[in-house]
Length: 252
Picture 1 (cartoon, helix red, strand yellow):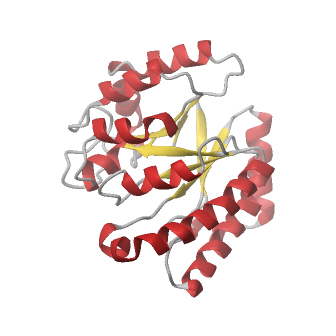
Picture 2 (cartoon, one colour):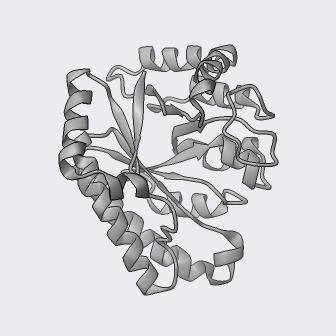
């Protein structure tokens, strides 16, 4: 079991570089591998507004400067494409997001990490697909959050996997009933985790997984669901099949 370090606004405002260094040293001593989740609130890398893009890139650059201390295996950033906000300027949005993904893919590569793009309010996988096609073969993949697909997308998980499956390198796993992003334990909601289990079992790529219960009391039930749905077994098989042990299970 490893961990995903979330560098959200609270972390960046309330912790100093010395504290981050101490935490990274503690994880190193205990041989805990890690991924990094970069800031995501109001980070619109594709917006036509140059001033807003500048603020977003500045915030992410600050996070990447801290992230390098943790020597992460991958860094998660949000694509943050919203149909209602950007569909009428899609070509412009796509141009700007591609420019910035290029920048942060390079940053990630410099610290030895893979850059992965997470879905949140994307109603379909189209924007994610269009960006990933631009970076095919480069240091960029997808982080598929199955809970966000269920809560916010009008496209099924099966369709998401069918559209961007070849690019998925990271999963965020939690459950809900489709009405809200509850972050319930795996198996408590309506998500078809067999699709995820099948994908992990059949892919030839290294896969990372982060379990995302938002309450401490849900951790054990989440782990039970992770095993009951065959996900633990699938990940164990991936670890055995991947000679460099790139795949791992994380928990926050």
